[in-house]
Length: 157
Image (cartoon, rainbow, N blue to C red; front, side, top):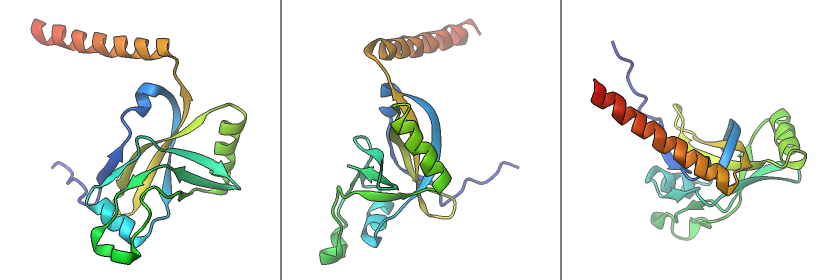
């Protein structure tokens, strides 16, 4: 019998451009501190993490420039759409991220924002190194070759 899909798991926002612009070395699941109106807005699927990034500042991890649309029914108790949001991570992981960014010149890129199986909002961030233009061309050529290879294999069968 096939396992049932989890009704609580839902992808809210995905940064598809990240894998094109960066080499993702590793990824990490982190929590995020949100207000009630932000969660309500996320449930309706109104967010964007494509232009955002994570930063280690004053011993804390922050998500900067992410967009969560205003929740109309919140009225005066709403939230700022592009405010900095604190990310929740263990001290050991924070030290590892700080070392990667400071010493190795890596970037912390948000990859996916989603509701996990318990219904909590989680963010997957990638520890990434930027690609040069030639690397992007090579990635694009490799992807095109894989598509062409699949077509040839499908035709030969």
